[in-house]
Image (cartoon, rainbow, N blue to C red):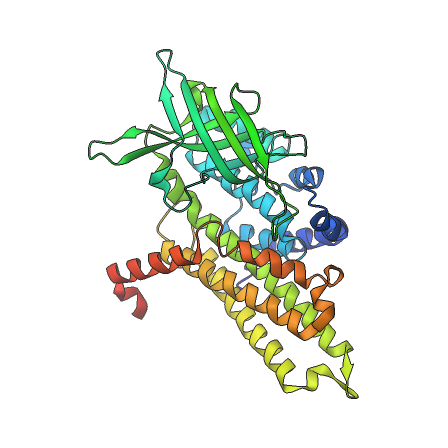
Length: 397
């Protein structure tokens, strides 16, 4: 069995996405990176292919596919344009999949059809100017009013899809994590809210520019200033955010690893092609030992990434937690390996590898964010070490 294409449905999905990438994504990738352009219409067009609702139920306009399908799509998109793939991930995984598994029937019926079609573009807002991995340290607050509605105050930072254009139009809908008090032990109580464009007090603070990489995705600061959110936009119960995060975080990390896989595959392809075309001292440079080391080690890392990522995807159930050890593991390994492979590609290609026309310098810049977003590599190291101390028997399974 091909672990990356276990069924005919998966193979056909890969072919469809690869064809779409060749025809529509690749031609715009260089310009969008160079000019920091978020191709909103291209993202919306993925709704016509069913990709925006990849894991959502057919009842709400989705196609109801599995974790393997999410890896396939992110790998294929990222082999061309990781910045565009990141915007897709923020919408399809962080928003759509999140709401699919945590929202009420009313919320899913009202919002998911618009998100799956591309009519609405969504985002997820957790990080703040002074808070990243430390979720319980959030300063954004939500207070309930006498009429049952909520008032949110605070700022969210580094939000992919937070703004949709250069005019400061905020995401059509965003899942916001906010502090709603403390539990009986004094621990911060975090709750999840659906904030929709047009709600008073919801705006874009700033669009983040001059990023090192992922320049084809929009990143923004979102501001909530006495933002009134109706009672029916509370997702789940008060204090449920940690459950929501755990249900979705493992898939997020898996798909970020899949993005790294796409970066690694394209980098390997480019360096191998160049090594066969370029000659020095009357020989192809692939005949030289150092070039062979770069290519050989990159191939081994790529194949190891691919096996680990798809094995984890084959064992992951959507909307369930319990795969943290491997979702942390694949992201820890794959994100660093992709950066190393992209770096090796630049070394093999020399000066050509350092200019935008030859792709790999962009892939190298884009790869760095994947070691930070969705959990830093240091947090993955901590989680893995902690989990292995609790369940050492898994080492010998």
